Length: 163
Ligand SMILES: Cc1cc2nc3c(=O)[nH]c(=O)nc-3n(C[C@H](O)[C@H](O)[C@H](O)COP(=O)(O)OP(=O)(O)OC[C@H]3O[C@@H](n4cnc5c(N)ncnc54)[C@H](O)[C@@H]3O)c2cc1C
Image (cartoon, rainbow, N blue to C red; front, side, top):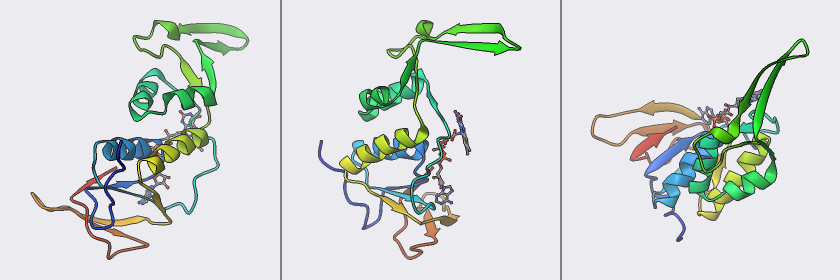
């Protein structure tokens, strides 16, 4: 697949936030040939684990993005969930009954999910602009939205804005 068009002359979409949601959105937009600019106010990716369980629907999305095998290999597959209180089992949920090509969950730290998605995004020709915070947003009916960021307020506006 050819790399996404450069976003320097005015992106089609500005994605605010390079967490899992923003990264998946950016990958999908770039995969479909849109010029994407991704900004994140953090100077570097977080080192906190945060979300640790990737469910079937997310795995389906990751398959579309092209990273599902890497995500699965990065973690531990769970076929069921059990809940306990005071040493007594309250419930067991069989994940194998989920109507999905991925009837299980993957336990993997969010840092890994972000690392894999970022590599995929880079492979699509898009890099993350870090240390850039969206500070203002103006929307006009039928026209382009304009965005101000802390690092580059004079950047061209996006034709659409997404989060
Ligand atoms: C301490 C902690 C522990 C957690 N533990 C769990 C857990 O055990 N299990 C679980 O399922 N979930 C957990 N979560 C929730 C999980 O992290 C979120 O559901 C997940 O990160 C949401 O992904 P996201 O991409 O929407 O947002 P985020 O991962 O929060 O990413 C949003 C990104 O947007 C950036 N951003 C925000 N505003 C701006 C702006 N104005 N301009 C530029 N950039 C901006 C932020 O810097 C951030 O990088 C936890 C969250 C935290 C904070």
